[in-house]
Image (cartoon, one colour):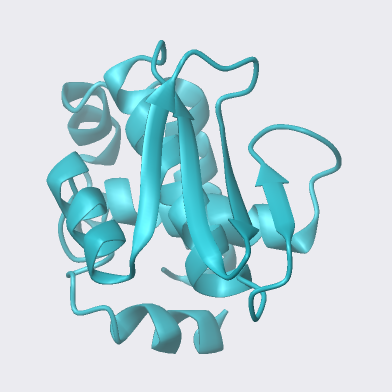
Length: 149
């Protein structure tokens, strides 16, 4: 996880320091030339690479909080797991909970609910005020307990 944190710190977006926004997501995608499409999907979202180009698709029907989580989850696949340009795809919520899915979830959770929230003693309140459900809140606490991130 420390190597991941080093990779992420090079983004210079204050990951895990402040809650990242949809504007931050789109800024990152523009900077890294990742094309984003929002449309009704049967899955929450997916990242794919074809002919050396990178794409993220997001289900347009998601709640704002779930959508933001999926956006950063899929961006994590690009950032942490992108191939050299060979065709690939990663679908959010489909298949086993592999190491790369756990890493993408951890990236997204820390992007949305920064370390200062967790350590504030008011984490549940801050997360609830931001609209995050109990499941995401518990997942974020688990990342903190496991990695101190």
